[in-house]
Length: 79
Image (cartoon, rainbow, N blue to C red; front, top):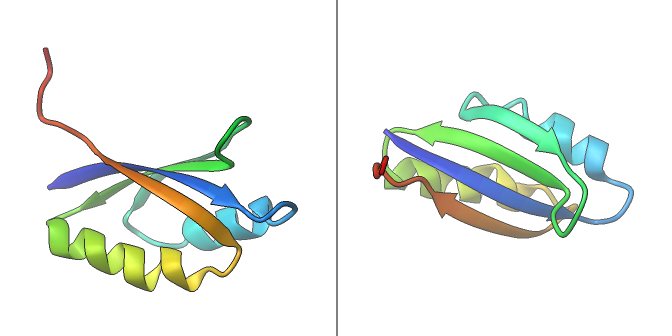
């Protein structure tokens, strides 16, 4: 299982619309509207890297109001 945090920048004024669309996907386990450089942060769980690629291609890239994303894949390191 791969857990990833995705940081999202949205075209101004479209945050709620994008939030509602993204949270429909069952891979999205948490979603937050935030202040700062990014507008929305989501945590997703996917079985493998191929499914992460599909999520980017079929969910994120289909939403025209998303300007930028940054994906952080969680490490198994627990310190």
